[in-house]
Amino acid sequence: MGHWMPKGVRQQRPTKLRVAPEQRGVARRVAPAAIVQNAAPKDAAPDRPASQIQILTAEVERLDRELSTARAEMAELAIRAEVDPLTDVLNRRGFERELKRSLAHVKRHAIRSALLFIDLDDCKGIIDQHGHAAGDAVLRAVAMVLSRHVRASDVVARLGGDEFALLLWNCPDMEAQTKTGAIEAAIGRTTATHAGLSLSVGASCGVAALLPLDQPGDVLERADRAMYARKVARRALRLAAGG
Image (tube, rainbow, N blue to C red; front, top):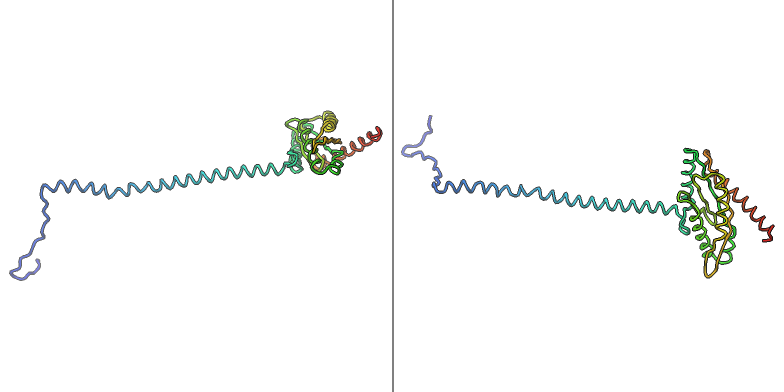
């Protein structure tokens, strides 16, 4: 059933948009271009994340370099914490670490190693007479002599004051005993120059073998006792010689 309309009024049909034949091709040609133009920003969008990735990569590389530098500095500080700043040999802390390592090696491989405990005889007199700078010059000279008279695998340390120690790896007992005499003689021949003065000291050296069941304090105590016994013997020899 159709719609009712008043008489005399005609129903109007929708007007169709007419496109001239010569314009139809233009419309077809323009449409793809518009699509491409509208799609261009979407194609360019990935450039922004790529740029951000490059920035983040550069930042990660920078942080990695800073971390490597910090680790190297920490390692250097750890090493310097175990070195005597005056003589540039190990200090007591560094020596105790090496002694523990040596004892573990002796226990594991059943090799002979030795600890030499060295005490300078006349260093205090030099300090009292010429001052601490003169004493420092003597300590540096002794450290240099000790470093020249050991192998690369051995350890030289200043325990404190005028006391030094050597760790001799893979060293039989008789060889270690011979080494004590050589060290005493080498130190006795050494002179240190300070303020135009030639200064020299003597040394007493005690030796103790590292045993598999030793704790660090055990071998240090034996070497210290041997050093003291040697000091007493040297003093007796000087008195007997009228010195």
